[in-house]
Length: 422
Image (cartoon, rainbow, N blue to C red; front, top):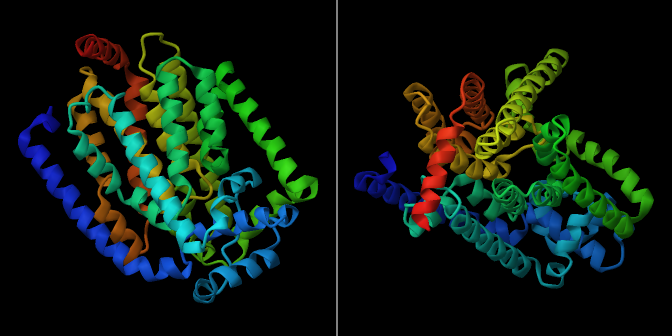
């Protein structure tokens, strides 16, 4: 295997250290903006302040959010020209109530440190559950994960994408341990970003995977009750309208760059900026095709007891990112898990052709190339082009899955590896 060669490891170390230096330079230049309150963490800190001060029923009141952000991050508010609205479900705001007791910068640093710890823990956890990549040194795993650009952006923005990555990773581990209900629970806990979770779990409902669906529904219902107890009926009923409003309001800077989203919506918006009807039709058609591909893969994988569940999980994770209506660079942290899973089963499946493997590895290399993200976001502002790479990888993997079944070889390799490890 190529990754076992000393020259390859040396190149990976060199690349990881170079990316670490580059990201340190970016962080140094972004520090002023962080201290002024420009990161996305502002929305969570604002929500925590609202709940802690007893105004939970006004969680989605822009005027109250503006008052808090004027008091906490006045320079950031002026530089943005608008508030950063809290557009997440009510239950997530509970996490940030303790942090709201600290100053903004202190709370940001605590949250960033927590996210770093989660990322490092996940790296070591995943290392124990991937057979083909397990031999790589732990320090190389840690460097590679931290220097993956979407993960770095999630850390620097103070976003919650790392938590979602954690939920998906634990759901994956639960599935390969044949604990579908627990997997459903973990996916349910990720519903604070339901735009990414719901596309992923839809095939489970279509294929009547009851245990996973039950875990998701139990968790989702519990979080709904928690949200209701926090903000009350009126605010909860208003939330969908508020969410849609924040997505359409042109005063928020991100709404001027829908074409910069690395999903199907962003891709077709970039290709057809002035043809809304045709664009919408193509997004719906493309989404239907991707969802069909995800469903067929799960059907093919789950219909064979000897199949490795990783194939369906990795492909569906790619599909979910493409299907998500709202998606930005930090959300692509999920690609880290998808890449690890896909590389693991590609490395173990002897029946996959060289052409398929070669194509898949090229697309994976592009998805993992941090400088490419920097160029597309900072220089060209064309991040939607990453959707083309994801779509190509998705198509290659789905086509190979439907044409033949390489999972028996994977299971044999996994069993052999487990016995050897024992």
